[in-house]
Amino acid sequence: MTSPAPLLDVSGLTVSYGAVEAVRGIDLTVAKGEIVTLLGANGAGKSSTLNALVGLAPRRARRLAFSGQDIAHLPTEMIVRGGMTLVPEGRRIFPTLTVAEHLLLGGAKHAGRGPLAETRAEMLALFPILNERLDQKAGSLSGGEQQMLSIARALMSSPDILLLDEPSLGLAPQIVDRIFALVSDLRSRGLTILLVEQNVALALEIADRGYVLVNGRIEISGSAADLMASAEIRDAYLGA
Image (cartoon, rainbow, N blue to C red):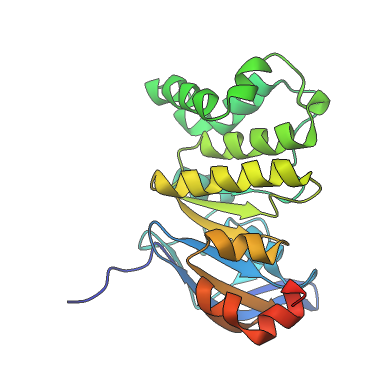
């Protein structure tokens, strides 16, 4: 019996900014329902990889398939409509827009249809603090609230896979714990997640598998348990 095709199938992905290659011909897959993490030092090419997958960075690839469809030449809007969305590093909220306006933007693919109201209600149930802040400008929210808003905005498009870039960046430890509990909960609801995270221990704790990027290339890959047990990973990233 053959295994089902991966939800995301990437082969030979290269990301170049002028003469600089940030990502150098990497291969990765993500199966439906998995949490897969991309690990590596700052500048290793992790964010460039996520941006390239949704068409926000210059890319070329031998294969770039999502849900069996070639997306290598699709614009970002079509990729999002097809079920892949990104929560960017640094949250990238619009300070002068309200929480409600952010959710409306995130749900643009549902505009004028019933799922918009249903998805918004689902997000407000998932993030109760946002329900209390609906008319508040996003720039006045705390860092943790802004991160929740950024995730909720992405989820408003009802994605099949969520690309999550450094969700713990700049947040207090107790907020980080809440964010990671939320990520685990999202997976339990059937969402597939490709995670970039600076906190390697936390990422491996919730992930199924991982890839380690070094200077734009994948140097190590394996199950989260194997990576956690690796002396090389412990020495480089876990301080052990």
